[in-house]
Length: 504
Image 1 (cartoon, rainbow, N blue to C red):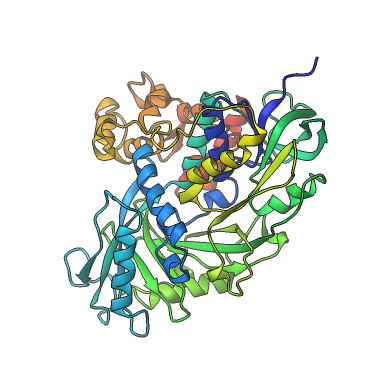
Image 2: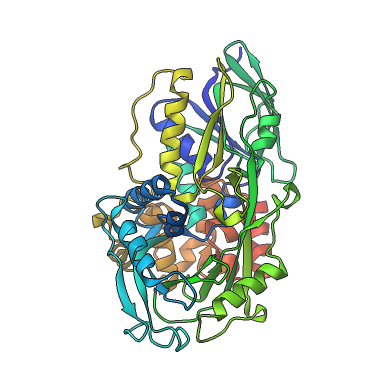
């Protein structure tokens, strides 16, 4: 007897895939999500770590995208206050850059285009104001400040997957969809375990059936369409690499900076964790061979160092770079010549005129994933069983139900509840898990209750939680996506975590 077909099969465990899976599961649909690698293994963990309206998109008249992004910024800040925090940006006036009147107009639009906002509005600032003095070169004396938000991108992905699973979705990581064919009103999809990942805990079915498929494979969206010969291929994706570098913290304050470069591009400089400054990003068109393991090229590193050094009082050189990462953005190819001008908006395309249906996701960004999911299900509604209405705009993500939506007060509560934790570990756990930290730490009364210590506050108890509840299977999953502690731990810690996972 064949198992019942799924209502929806989602291919891809990045932010758009998990967003669709969560939304669909919460509407009562049966959902299967398959991800060839780890959740957020590629583009969704290699972003600039921002939830933002996209100030620069105003230059390209993408008012709908900016309006939607600003509205989503408010919603996401409310449903995930542990992962998303307000961030004040300083935009210095640069000689030869955009004139002050144009920036003032753009920021006025940015303050009002999304409707009611909770964040402070933009204002003029002097670079000698308290907290700003000494950060930039003396030639920069005036500018503006405006608000956006920072985010832990990989944990945002995982939180959506956790909620999807809680609402009934099945999440299979390390599993590829290798083909699909229509059988009556259903897709018959073949699956295979990825041999480069540790084996899944349960057997992978050779085939599954689904009433509809969402192709959210990111940079591989066209490849997945190639596995579905019955689907029309209308859109094309343009692969644009964005690289980032980390250097030692360059200023004490929590403000970020947006630098205008002579080539018309902008570069962000953002406080990252307690010890680093993040500088990014680039826009480089790449080929398919760079999708799996993109690297920041020497030219990109030099470009980011030069761009930051043109503004910062303490210059940045390639020798100062402590780490880097790159992600390949699967942008919808709208025919624009310059990579920086290619739309960051998403395009959703149906592949068939009849059942079974397939919907492919082109483009998109972290900020708009929730709205993208709503739009995707609206498009698929005629080909799916009856389902309940939209619900994700106000439902907190796991861990996001903080009392008073106050992350500072919650962090203090965590420190008081488990006083044996050092301050940085207590804060990291509060920020990463929110109210789910109770599940991670439980009734522990001393560090010894948390098992083996791997360094920087990472313990066996946390590793167990990540493996049991968040699909982590390797040390890289844990150190570079679930916790980011790979930035501060030595290679020996990765070996210890890998050995521990192997012994479980």
